[in-house]
Image (cartoon, rainbow, N blue to C red; front, side):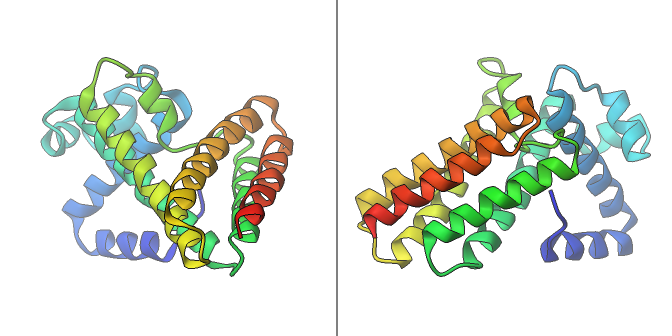
Length: 206
């Protein structure tokens, strides 16, 4: 994912506060590693090395261990993705064009990361399905936030509330599936096709 103004502000604040800087590095490292390797494939020691922090620091900030850290990592990814989504949707007046623009943004991000950095929460959430209610809850909150952002954009253009609700679910679910398919195939085609057909669907409701 690309840096955003909010991300830069957080980094600036962290640079002025060593304690905040350490915690921020740990959360970012956990988010990045779990996004790429999943929950089971990421260890606390690897996170501490990636964050350039001691194991003691990791457990100081996250006494609940890897599960607590995974929740923080999901929330971090949630807020960053939400900001990217909100920015992309705000870049176009027409919601169909806005969603199409966001699929292109996702494709560019994947291509830049060599098809490694997909959804910031799915890999972690799926790896703990049925075993960690806190992680599942954090993931569910993330999806709900993203749907709300899409819903708000659709409602702004006069789409009826019920239709906007259903369309928001469709948009987020389709983007999630298309992003995963793009990663697996190492091609932007799934996202390109998803964006095109989502735009047509939204236009039908305008």
